[in-house]
Image (tube, rainbow, N blue to C red):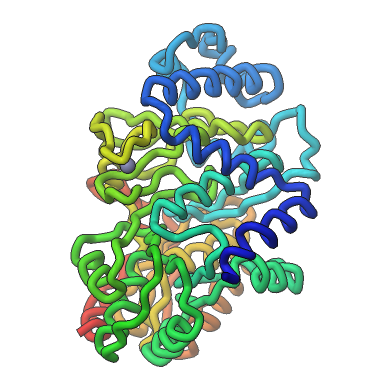
Length: 447
Ligand SMILES: [Zn+2]
C-alpha cells in the first residue's frame, strides 16, 4: 500500500516540485521499448544526426577534429556513415574537457559527474539537466525489467552511498523517495553483512541492487545463517561482471532471477537484461553503440547536448548479437560484456574493499593522478603504480600515505611506482586493482 502511494502520489509530487520531467519521459520510454528494431534504429539515426549537427555548430573539439579530417555532419545518411568520424578517448576528455563543452550552455548550470570509471583514469563529465532526467528515466525503466516496481523500497549493496554527498537534503530525499537501506562495501565484514540481512528481513525491499560480488557475498552469508525469507521482487547486479557461479548462489538464496546491468558514470545506463535474462538490451534512446574490430565498445551519447560524446571509446570489450529478444522489445542486444573487472582488496584486519571504491578514492583525491593501479602482493603490502602529470608533488605523496592509512589501517605498507603507462590485459582490458590474496580470503568468507 505504501509502495502504491509512493509511486502514484509522492514520487510525482516530488518530481513536479523539482521541475523534473523524468516520469513523463518514463511513460514515453515504456512505450518505445516495444517499437520494432527498424523503428528504433530510424529514431537513433535521427538522434545521431541531431547530435552531430549540434556538435558541429557549438563544440570546438569536434569543429577542429572534423574540419581537419574533411568531415561534415551532412555526410551521415545512415548509421554506418558514422564510422568515418574520429574516435574520442578518455585521454581527450581528460586533457581537453573545456573544448568538449557546447557553447550553447552555461557551464555553471551543468551537472558535474566526476568518475574514475572502470579504468582508473579520473574524468569530469558535465551534463545538461534534461539529459540527466532522460537518463534517469531510462534507468527507472530498466530497473522494472528486474521485477521491481517503482515506489518500492530499494536495498543497496554499494560503496560510497551517493545520498551522503548531498547532506541533509540527500538524506531526506533518500528517506522519502528511495527509502533505501545501504550496505557500504568499504569495510565489508561478516558482522556488517549479518546486520544488513536483519535489515532486509525487517524492511522487505522490492529491489536488491549492488556490485555482483557484494551480492554474492551477501547471498553466501544468508545461506550460511539459514535465512531463506528475504524475497525481493528483483535483483540488479552492476559495475562488475556477474559470473554464472555467483548468479547461481544469488538466485538460489533470494528465489528470484538476478538481472545483469552495464553502465558507466560518463553516459549512465548502457545495457540491461530484461526478464528473459538472455543478453542485455541496449538503452537505444540514450546511447548509440558501435563495436570496433578489437571488440572495444564505442558510445555516442544521444542525450547529453552540453558535453557531447561522439564515438567515445569507453574501455570495455563486448560481444554483440543480432538475435531478437522474445520479450518483444525492439532494443538491440549485447550478448556479453567481456572485460570489466573490479577485484576486491582485503585489509590487514580482514575487511574487504571493492576495487571501484578504491579507484575513486585514489584517482580522485590525489592531485596529479592520471592513472592508478593497485596491486596487493601480500595481506600487508600494496604496490601502487601511478601515471602522473606535472601537478603531482610532495602533497600528492602525502595524500597517498593518508589514504592508505585511512582505508587499510596503520599496518599496511605500500610502495609507490611512478610509471609511464599501465599495461592492459591481453583482452584489451585494464585492471586497476589486482589482489593476490583477496581470492583466498573471499573463498574463506563464502565457504
Ligand atoms: Zn528482452
